Image (spheres, rainbow, N blue to C red):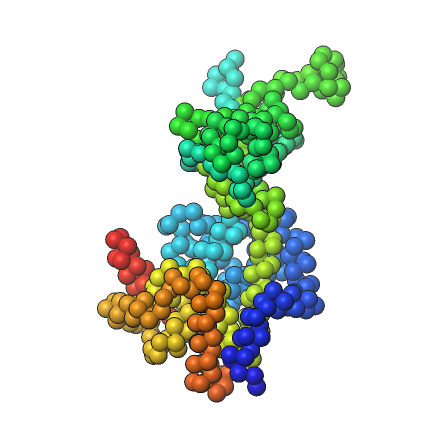
Length: 418
């Protein structure tokens, strides 16, 4: 049997090619094609949970396949989302749930509805939205930065219209004084101009609110009828459409970026993309999970090595390693620590965290060369210590076997001054 170090090097030396080979496998290609063809239709939690193939694919992409059966649990994860620190996903020690909740954030964006008149003869209240955050003093759109927002308004019970507003170096060229220092006023003007050039002209207005945030509001309009001309009768008759009333709605949410190399810029509404825009991200995660899982079937150490190589660049401290059973296994192997149990005391946990921080330069793992050297070191030690592939690999990747979650959260809060 090929040893761990050799197997890891064969996969990692050209990870792109390894993923392409995995993607070409008939079963993987079939499920990926189904996901890409159907995820854009998913708009609610029920939509996702109701399509078993989509749901199972998404769960595997985030390493949660062992929890696919627990739909009630996952519904709670999805419905509470990840925006609040008190949400269900954020209270779990396993950050896979937080990542999943962020990826499939169906409540994303903000929506407002117009109101009926307070009394006869008065206009109804317009649907109005202001960004949760004020605009920064200046934005740099000279490079890859892009803001991509979908502005959608229901005009009446049967008609909804929308426009995708994009702010980037191309769309702002010639409209702002300095692309590297775009002002809030220039942003508001550019957004308003794109709305006025769309089907929402005269139906939605945009500008700067008094607090410096970007705002949108529905406006009254005259529907000129079928002929598009003033006056007329029957189907050609003009109709006044009020700015308010329950049939007038306004929704602002993120839209997919125009190209893969763009970097999302936040103008107050956040930057997380919805499920339909995450197809490529999720399929890449699915391929990586499939690759790691298959490698683990032959050699637990290879799966651990690949997993550590994927997760390590995002780590900021030793407690993140301790909170993940698979990462802990790698760290313990390299520095010669025995495995800990979930019953470890707070003091023992602190000592272990300090030792990991001293023995492993976590910041250096962001350097691909240093990370590769570290993982190869692990693989070599694993080879020397394990003659078979019989280690209980599943427990390492299901959140079990690690330190006590509640103790970890409390310890992290204490270190952060909380």
